[in-house]
Image 1 (cartoon, rainbow, N blue to C red):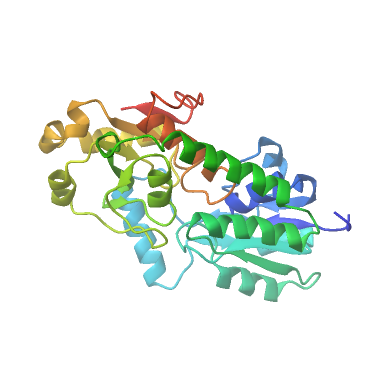
Image 2: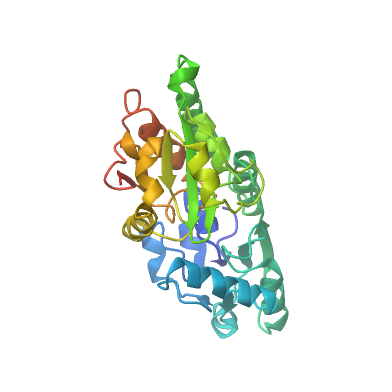
Amino acid sequence: MKNSSVRIVSLIPSGTEILATLGLTDAIVGRSHECDYPPEIQNRPVCTQARLNSNAPSSEINDEVNNLLQSALSIYQIKTDVLEQLQPTHIITQDQCDVCAVSFSEVEKAVADLTHSSPEIISLQPNVLQDVWNDIERVGNAFDVDSVKVLENLEARVKICQHKIQGLSLTEIPTVACIEWTNPLMTGANWIPELVNLAGGQSLFGATGKPSPQLEWETLIVSNPDAIIFMPCGFDLNRTRQEAQLLAQRPEWQKLHATQTGRVYITDGNSYFNRPGPRLVDSLEILAEILHPEIFEYGYKGVAWEVL
């Protein structure tokens, strides 16, 4: 990096991870309340807070989110006093999802109020895997950092997965339901169907590059997937287990093919699947390990995923 006076505030976890992958960790002077990786950024000042209780039941969180959005309020607040003190030269945010992180318009408003600095806003907008690669390149370009090796490494890992599943027959490719929220029931979309297909599965719901749709309980039962993978937005492995067990108490659950064959899985969606940064490749490897343990063994089991 040519300019050592760069001071970056990252308001989205995936942005923080992109910066770290590009070797820019030392330039991060502030972060969002959800930025927790890599561990060394956890001592940076926190510049955001949530307006909702993330420990509440899923249905309550969903209601609170909808109420805030209907009142034209952001789900997150920016601590402008902290921003003012940090005097960033750049702010990384996103324009992809109002529920995932501070919205672009909120950041613009906050920056307009700053008196000591006028930082450049870099807004990420990933919907598919290629968008994530483009974001990494764009962030690299913004700070004069070469992203070529980083991208080559990530793309090589994707190609390894693709190569290893080439010999699978159609009968060996399981149908997969990815659950992104349990109440109401929602399925993973955007880059999730793409990752499932790359890992040797057939994604049943959700369209690549589109927002996550709600799913009727009856539709899940009728489609009777070969595998069900829980990856709720913002939840770690333990919280995901609690959510999945609530759903598994329904009487129809025991009749599902995935339940009967022991192919219901929980994952750490917060660290992996819901963060459109470099660890989406880890997410692909996790899916590959879940769906085809006879081919893949990366060592994520017990840390990033478990059988329910």
